[in-house]
Image (cartoon, rainbow, N blue to C red; front, side, top):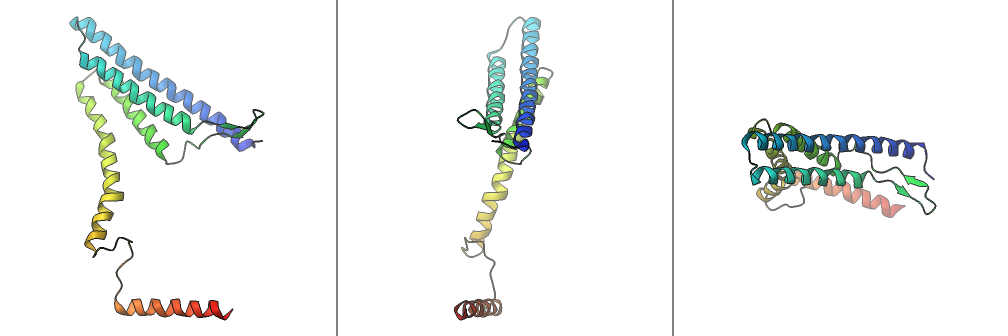
Length: 178
């Protein structure tokens, strides 16, 4: 049986998912209204505009479903609440899905005004490239340049290495003594 914290998290997650759903629907409606207005004004609709509507809708719903799966509560066999779902405030992949969802809605709402707003979608791969460089590529290059030390241990001079060895030997003798 779940405690008060799990029930509170379940309520918070349900409220948050409802807000995200309304936000996503607002973006879809705004982009569809812009597409309809453009069709009324010019008398035709380009396939690129329809493809953009479908693509942003797919990205938005994929993010929403990912967030929903993260926030899904778990129940026991009798239907009692075990866990209220994941904490939406934590900085996990869930947070990145929130960011992509917000950028998607921003692009959906403002892209009918100007095609330049589509460039905001470049923030997503740009941030992914930044994280890739910061956490994978640059540490790999630094470890390669440090003489092939892939373990990430700092290089020690002879005096420091000797002192560390004496400390380890002393600790080992004390273990054997007891």
